[in-house]
Structures are given as structure tokens and as C-alpha cells.
Length: 361
Image 1: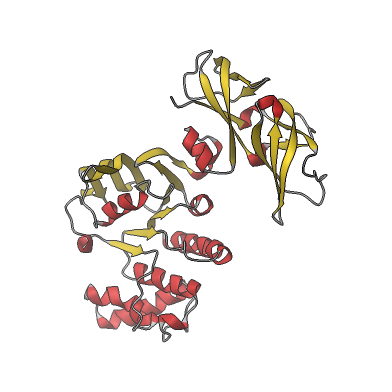
Image 2: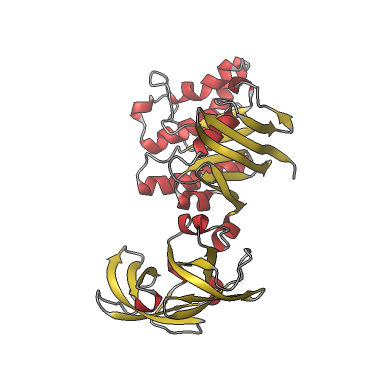
């Protein structure tokens, strides 16, 4: 599959501040990529360079194989949905969708049919005569999507368009964005700080921190095999505790952590005996009660129990790990035994679920 987007060693500096440092990735035609990271990590600056609103300080951006580093935004075949939507309040939904078609001098005879087609695509047929203030937040989102897609852009850019919605509506719109993207096959780049949104919507994820791309991978691969300590901690609910390497080979790593000796999955890093490391375990991989065939078994004390409806979240203090605080999920609280605060609880996990990363100096 040919790459529609190619980002090659792109950097952006604002005075002494470097917002993006040597970023690089590629995106095939028809794929959905999300750039995710904490506030201030550089993800929006990178998106604005792709859109043409900012010029790279270094590096190159290619769309469809052609360099666009100096091509103005209005000459790029890009549709965009903003965080604040930017719908024209005095225009109806249909007029908002028609606006980019008129600006691109589409045949007036074509515009009416296009507007109806895209309002139907976003499930707003019959709402074309309504003004934005007469629509719900989710309906306004749909108008913004239809407007961005109405002229059939080569690339769709999403700048945190769901961040202002409540959780239920946001989750519904995540699925709606994905449905529309797959139905049209439009290449899409989304920017968000919401890790769930990134996992739900994307074929591929770019994780950024401090202006640097930490990892680029398919969604499932990135979740199951984080490449850095930052990625492991940012994607998913992950507990960290310090350790020291006893031995490491192609089969795995043996680590001393507090008073415990643990086994972990093989790391991509070269880890020598005696190296200081960070151990990482995801909350859903911890087994409560000590049952089953587990590679590591410990005992902890429940410090906090939080009922979230579909699951119970436990914060467990583990003396053998130097009093490390471990988060664990119980996704079946009606069936499994419940543990009270201050109660002792057996915990365990398998070697493949424990990650080990070099400790930052």
C-alpha cells in the first residue's frame, strides 16, 4: 500500500523552545493514525505543520509523494475538524457543509446533492435547515465532519474534536468517526491526549513526549509491547516499581525487586547483571486470590477499593516489593471474592506480562 503521508526528520522551534524534535513516520492511504501524548508534548504543533498552518524548522513533509513544506494550507487537499468545531453560527447545517464546496467553486448543480449525501453519511438527513445552536453537541460534531469531508479531501485531520464532550457522547462519537472513516476509506490523522480514544479509533498510534516520538506501532502491538517506560506508563493503567537485573538472556530477565525475585519477558534493550531497571505491570494482568498457573506470586494489603460498576479497582501495597503500590482490576466483582480495605490479598502474574526498562539516569 502506497504511503499518502511521509514525515521525515521534522522539527519545529519557537525561539529557544523546540516543540517537535526530528519526528518521523509514514501513513498508508486509507489508514487511521492517532498522535497521542500529554499536554505540551508537541502533537498539535506536528498536526499544524501537516495542515500547513506552521512551517517546519527542519525536515520534510510529503503528501502523496510530493513535498508540501512550503505549500500554503489552502492549497493542500486536507479537511480538518477542530476542537472548537468553528461552525458558522449564522449558517444552517446544510450551508456549513456547502461552504468549502462554494469556496472551491464546485458546480452549484453538484453542491446540493453533495450536501445531502454527506449529511446522510453522518446520519443528519432531515437536519439541514437547522442552525448550529438548534443542534446537540454530538450533532454539531457530525456537521463539522460532513463539512470537512464534503469536498473529498485526500487527508482528514482531527484536532481533539471530542475533548469537550461528556464521556458517553465522546465514546459514541469515537465509534462514529471510525465508521465514517472506514466507510469512505479516507486517510486520517487524529490528535488526542485520550489513550482510550487512540486505541479505539486507530490502525496505528504515534506516542509523543517532550516533542519526541517515543514509539510508532499498530494499536495492539503498541499496547502489548510498549517500547519505552513512558509508553508503558502512558498507555493503560500501569504500576511501576524499581528493580535490579540478576540475569538476562533471549528467554527473559530475572530481576531482584525489594525482597522478591521476579521473572519478566525478554526486553529489546541490552540489560547487564546489576543494571538498575523499572518494572511495569498492567492492572488487568494482575490476578487476585493467587489462583491459576502464575509465574510470580506475592501478598499485599488493600489500601483502597473503588467500585466503578463494571469493575473494581484495587490499590494494593506490596511489602515484598519495597512497599510498592500496585493497581489491579477485578472485571467480575459479582462472581469473584471482594477484598476490603486493610485486608491481605494474594496477587500474581505471568512472566510475559511484566515489562522491564532501563532506569533513567
